[in-house]
Length: 284
Image (cartoon, rainbow, N blue to C red):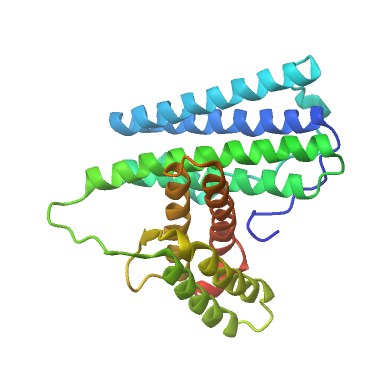
C-alpha cells in the first residue's frame, strides 16, 4: 500500500483488536503532541506550545471516544495486550524532528503536519476496512475512517485560518479555477510522471481516475485555488481541500455523500503522491 509508510503487518480479526489498535494510535498522538508542546515551551515559543496543547487535547477527546465506543460495543475498555502487531506509523520522523527542534515553525506548518498525520490515519482505517474479514470489523473500520476524515477537514479549516493570518498585506492569491479543469491538469501531470517510470501503473491509474473525477465534479461548479505552475502533489492537495470544503457547504444528503466520496478519493491520492514511490519520481 504505497500511501502508508508500510503495509499493516496483519489483518484486524475482531472488534476488540480494532479498538485496541485505535486506542494505541490515539494514545501515540496525545503523547507526540504533548511532547511537541513541551519542546515549544522550552524554546519560549508559547503560541506554538498552546497550539500543540490544544491539538493534544483534541486527540484526548478522540481517545475518550474510542474507549467509550469499545465499552458500548464490548463491555470493556480497549486492551493493548491483545495486539499481535502494531499499526504503521502515522507520524513522519522527519516531521517529528522538525517539531522538536526547529525555531522557525509557524502555526501553518504545525497544522500542516497535524493534517498529514490525520490523512495517514484515514488511509490506515480505509485499508483495514478493505481487508476486513467480517462485516462488523469492516463497518467499524469505515466508521473510524470517516472520523479521521472529519479530523482532516477540521485541521484544514484551522490551517486556512493560520494561512490567512500569516499572509503579508498585498500578497497575491491565485484565482479560483474549475475543480474539473484542475483534475484534468492533474491527470496530465500524472501522465508525465508515469512516462518517467514505465513500470508505475499506479500513476497511470491515478491519471485515469482524475479524468473520471473531472467528469463527476463538472456539474457541481466547484472551484479550487491552486498556483498556476504547481506540481502534482500541490494540485492534488488543492483538490482535496476543495472537496472537503464542498462537503461542508452541502447540507443535502446526496450532494454531501458525493462530495465526501470525492474527498476520500482525493485524500488517498494525496497520500500516495506524498508518501509512496510517486514521491521519488516527483523529486527526480
